[in-house]
Length: 322
Image (tube, rainbow, N blue to C red; front, side, top):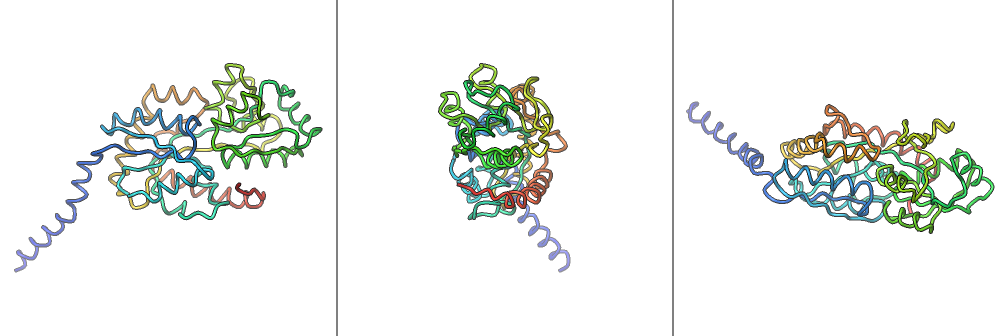
């Protein structure tokens, strides 16, 4: 009887393990959708398409980009949160979308608990740029002009982190700007090039091509290092409080099995290690996370730490989502 009972228990354990084994052997068996919660042509979209092109090699399946915009990325993140936790719908999200939005929106999902981290990808630094005909030549002249012309300059803000940085800029310099919300960087840059708006907070990734072409001008970068030799950091200009950067990372819906997360993580790591992918991403002034940092646990820790840091600060600043 003991032998028979032991055999039954052994067989039962094998039955429980079968679904995970079968899943690991068959995933992925169809295309994977990566939701980008911000507009096409923006920095997150550009990175997503570079990564998708290489990840399909590792995954042996097409990786499809779906732009789902609205409400500072909350619409796209919400769609990802509601997706089936089977690894076929994931999201490439920014700190603005996956941390800062939690301080201002009453969300129908829990940013901290309704997603399973896959891997952090890169850090990107916002940059203040202006139309090429704007009278100020550098950051000092810009601040002086803004002080003598309150609310006469318009500034595009295409993500919540830009709104935070714009608010801090006004507080730190005693200036007043007219903030104009945009649904992503691409339309803001189009209006900036056309001269329909004066200034914008964008990422170096999407601004650098226009800067190099002379279509726009740059005043300062908010990171801790220069992207171009003639663009100072805010810290160098005596405004260290304006030092700020964002990360991009991949998330899956809560409940996605760990073996699938591991498969996706391996694809992200392999793609971001590819020399062609790295050169395409790094030339835009971003920094890819080191291999030992590209773990689900690292992304979870970063998200938690940034929420604990920025939620109280942003609420105290009185920034309101529009």
